[in-house]
Image (cartoon, one colour):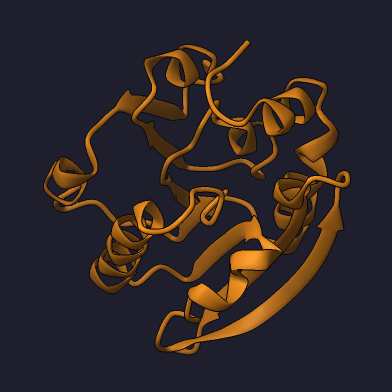
Length: 172
């Protein structure tokens, strides 16, 4: 069993949370480059349409060991503090924040500031935010972005399974 919230991982392991990936993949075009922050097991890499490049990271070695082995993917175990330096000079069309609000405050406050720092630095065409609806109000829409699509998903009674997926598009 993977570490983390057991109820969430039960659903991840049986594929019932994959609907969020299908919705996002349908909304985005082919040939994009992706930065998947706290990628978990890297599940979205299996749904992205013909990506040029897909980079994901997570703090958990066990998650990274379960990531897809596609030639267009690179997954690493990284500390958040090294992420911006590690990706210097890269360009990303999409920043993925799947499970952005699964953690509870104050842990999420650190992650939130990193998310906004990376969005500001890379100015991607899209930002994908997926998280627990109960925490949605804690996160602000990225500056300079508009909502392209928004979907509410229910995967069970547990609060961690009531999710929202928002795809933001850069206004420029």
